[in-house]
Image (cartoon, rainbow, N blue to C red; front, side, top):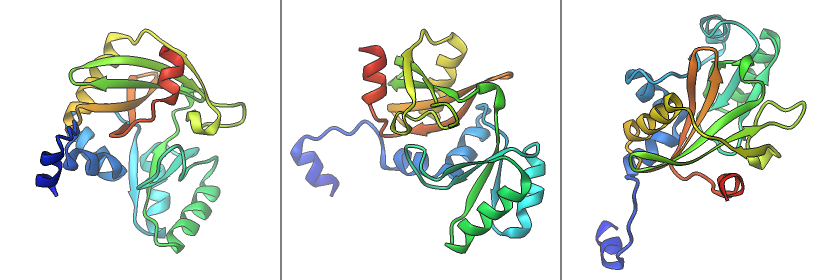
Length: 200
């Protein structure tokens, strides 16, 4: 397969390993945390008995529940309390889905930052805002976008996260927490619709 692409002169900036690691949310969180990149407090849930201890480990409800694979906000659920979290996780696990539980970063107030990293720099950045009553700020969920001048701290975290994941082109999604930038996700094939709209 590689030989075939070489003959076609197709350049792929991201490695297969980088793409695979970034698509597996658990693996990505493990890699980033090993390199001291700020992430929301996270716990992996394998069975029903893990749910309550996991919620306590991330700081209590409300919590965000995430499927290990998913894009555009699909498979991301906000559980306002422990009982709802237990019910959601039990339902997901009945379909053989493993999940992550993350601390809900309330101070981000339904918004996040997407930085488009190419090589060793951020070429564009935007703030995404969720619709009223929605906590996911994805453009595909109706979120609005605005261009921003990315603070140096956020720019460094975005570039570092992309490079740690082995990606030369990436969309790095970060929350604005009281403790600085927290990386939610590093996308190996970021959609360009929102960033083009914001940055023109």
